[in-house]
Image (tube, rainbow, N blue to C red; front, side, top):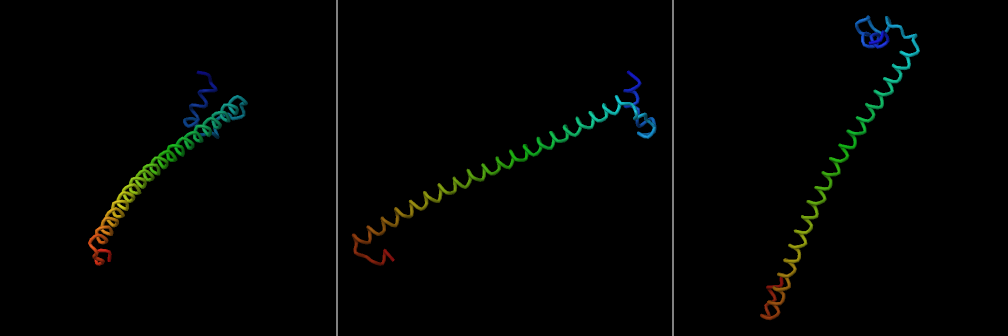
Length: 103
């Protein structure tokens, strides 16, 4: 391992950044590159988390929509059944000439 990389790995043991030769152009470029790579990594992680959360929300909304569609179908079926029974009672009232069945 070169002295340059040993300095990077041993910054903490050298007593902090104040005791490391940062005037070296190669070290400055390496540190800038490392900082940029780390920032890009953090941004990628943030984007990944936001995509995962958005996917979970989309799935939850899809489930809610499916549930509401099922409830709508059930209500339509009930309404059709009530309408049919109402028509049957009206027909029965007409044939028997009993108006109280309509009320």
